[in-house]
Image (cartoon, rainbow, N blue to C red; front, side, top):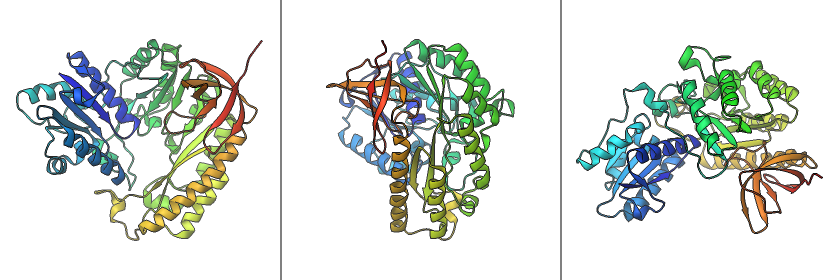
Length: 441
């Protein structure tokens, strides 16, 4: 059969889609670029927050409306895992569901569809299915995500991920290293390690992180895939960033001096209600340690505004926190009450118009900070990984920018996609940088 996959949501979903496609290819099915040419339309959905669910339903409705009589529509991912019956009611054109804990059975599902069986269990009893390792092929571009775990052990009061994916399950180290080697063999120059909490890697496998956890994994990948120039770590839980990890990042030139620390807020009372680490002094000490070890490190964080009970004083404390830390990159999210989470039952929900106003204020503040942080790069000569070229312009990223979520470096010259170019930063905007190639005699 011919299949087409539409992927919504985060980078972890993108990896799952890639792996489903590979399993289908291995079974003799053929991927096609155009939905109308497919026998099976597979939509990998997101259900993290209400806007993501709304987007998933909108895309499903659009695809269902265009579906031909003999085409099959399969809904996969987080929405299928948690809202299967609702999908059946809202999208009657759907033919099958497969959830986040059973997607490695996608080939079996298609076979059962051929036999007239509509559905697989959404929760697989196979523990390893959650983090199945499938042969990796480089996607378009010189950068690739590598998922090292799925699920989450944190008990954040606002988050539905544990309800959807269950506790964290780590991919065995040997499988991660093999995937890294496969990506490197296909020309990938940057590998981005992702999980809900990358810094917790190893606890599921050995009961404790540390040398046998993320540090050991970093060393193993660097040794096994010398072709990879950049190894980037995303989604580091602040209390799990050890002095050993900081030292390893500072001492190894192939580990990007970049860290994403999703802190969620800057006021201890809000953090307590979020069931997040709330010792703000510890965060300041962590940032100081990171910048002392790596003065050129790029730091990213994310914050939620409008959390239940958030007062104007607490919100102002968040703004002050952002001003004092001066993160290079920040994502600001409006609070969304998620069914089944403890936060949804808290009193004092903030009015939507107030949430929107606070979101705008926080984003405007971060734009000012980002501009200053980018202006501090003027005159620096940095290796730029080129990702696109056209009409006299090349687009790439420095180590300071993670793919898809951060800014770009624009170079007025046509360079080689997938290669590194040394460039001097000559202009700065709120999110992007302008550079010119450095010609060495």
